Structures are given as structure tokens and as C-alpha cells.
Image (cartoon, rainbow, N blue to C red; front, side, top):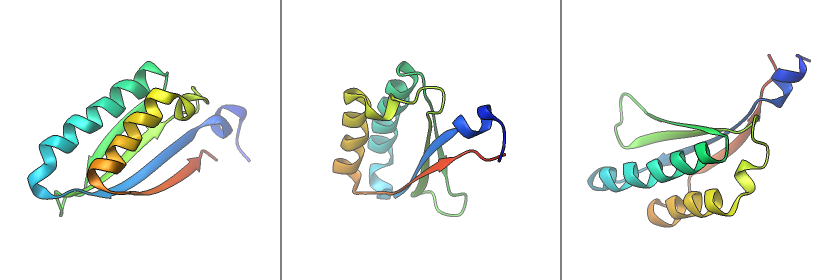
Length: 97
């Protein structure tokens, strides 16, 4: 099902609700995750729900850097988000087409 390149595509998504009065703190914490992900060869994006500015979905694409999620620095950055803003709903996805 799909080519080798497509089956290597991997994505971690996390949905998170952030208190409106802490959006700046969240943006700063996310920037750390994004920077660390890039340093590990992964890519990271943050999207906000258009109807609710306190609902976010975080993406880390790591297919080109299969060990990125397991590095200590990225684990710490992601754990910091969980500690500061509560656990998000996280799922791992793989490309099929």
C-alpha cells in the first residue's frame, strides 16, 4: 500500500486545550519543541482551531528522522508541555498515500 517513501512518513499529533490567559507561555514552550524537533531532523507545526483560540493541534513529522521522538531533549521539551498545560490527546500516524 503506497511506495517506500510514503510508508516512511510518520506524524505525531497532539490536541491540547490551553487556558486563554496562558497562550503566550504555551507559544514559548511550543517554540522550544519546534526548535528541538528541527535540530533532530524532524519538522513541527502548530495549528489553532479557528472557532476556539484556546484549542490547538501540534504536529511533529519525524519519518525522515526516525529516532527524533526518542531523543532526551525532545522528550524533555514535550514533557514540559504536558507538565505546564496538562496532557494532550496524542496519536501516531503513518503515511499510506
